[in-house]
Image 1 (cartoon, rainbow, N blue to C red):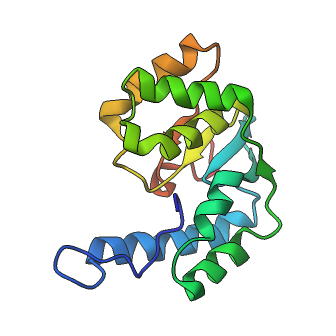
Image 2: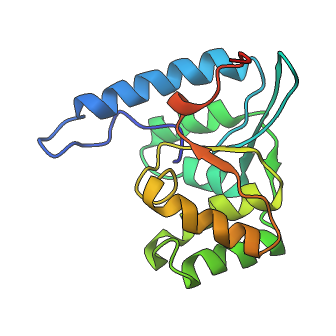
Length: 173
């Protein structure tokens, strides 16, 4: 699931790699601390900035809920519990069309169609930040320009795609 790494993910040497363990731990901390400020999710994040404050509201898409409900039962229950009470954004026709364009025009490979839907839902709902640990297909600097151009050609503002580490802390600096 984008955004909630699972410590059960196996690294190339067996067991959970140190980087994944660190990422998972940091995300749990980010989720616990920043969720109280009503961050976005998946993660689709709607933020507005005034001169000195951030307003945050946390959202997920139904796709995130579906992804959270797959896999190991204990992990699945933890993920679904974490999502409880967070409003889900619908997969609209506009989001579906954008996801299709992202794949058709080569911004994301066909096997990453679900990832294209994360971007499509965020853009269709005017989410400012799409927060994810998926650096292969979503938070990928080499794909970012193409993703943004396709969103704009569809008449949509692309979300700012970032990892939780990159998300503004709320300060105006």
